[in-house]
Image (cartoon, rainbow, N blue to C red):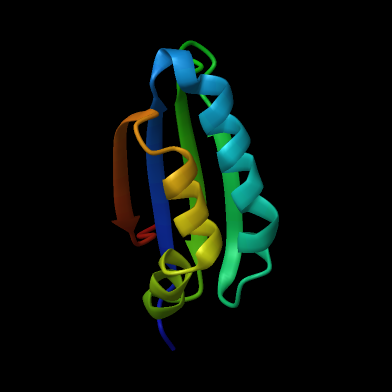
Length: 97
């Protein structure tokens, strides 16, 4: 059995684009949760710095997560937020305990 994959994605919006980035991130949730292999897809916003968003995701395997990364709704998000994101850090992780 393939081990599940956890993704932690940190997105920081430009301070003048927080509402836009948040709105576009929220649009990803319903479609992504319907994708094959998606076990968990939760969006968080930092309490102290509202420009920081974190997706906590669990996927049944890396291949299905990679397929997710090629989906049209992610391409639409990228186009809509072009120039509105200061930083994006993605960590692929495996649960160890």
